[in-house]
Length: 310
Image (cartoon, rainbow, N blue to C red; front, side, top):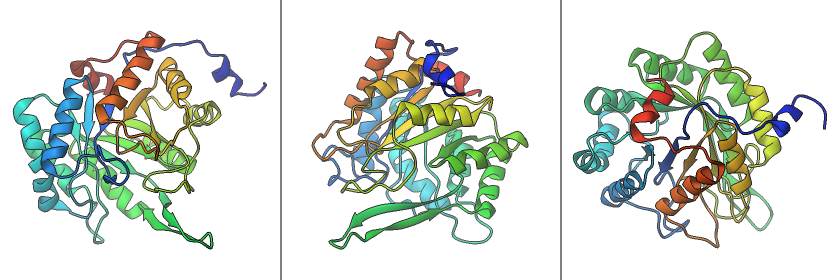
């Protein structure tokens, strides 16, 4: 092989920090995807506590309705978070954003409240548009939704994170998302604690039950090296998340991510295989075991924020 990607194929394992492994508890998944998916405030809180006790460095969760905003969304998140925080005051967790519902909102209003009142210091920022397939009919026609974050909303979300000192998790669904994030970052439109999250999509993608994904790139070494080359010297910690992998063997992929200094997001928000129903803790432990095989230390809870740059 020749060209720039050859350097990644030939690269020896190298890292400068322990590996952060997160648990993404629920997302938009249902018990139809996996009967172990937690539903409701009590189940999600209990699952988050289990993952924290099993060594997750951070917990990501969704509230009961992603369409909520502002005070309503804040209160809904806190119905889950309060028992988590009562048992573990130092638990490191964060929410997701929501779609802006007017020309003046960012969709980050509840994130600002979570930072002010609960110390939550991270926010997901998805910098682009994608068609998310749900189903396909007998004619081969695909049903789904378009998830779009236009520049007007993106600008307000970035400004919100900078103003309120909230770390930006740049969600990279497609290569164009990364190029968009780079434009903001190189102009200094980024906050302390920010990171890159490369989404890799299997056949089932983000929410579909049939294998009809239309998004992004698959979890292969070629895809990983392409993204790392495109990212260049961006200077932020980077993570991978694998969505709807099905029965694909992603262990070699995750191993290489850990070898090259990346961090890993796991959990039932991401995972779907119609023939396998793991728990969030099992998925976390699988990633931890790969890190041990590589020989890269697992980050301790108190290290995770420092690695992110807080």
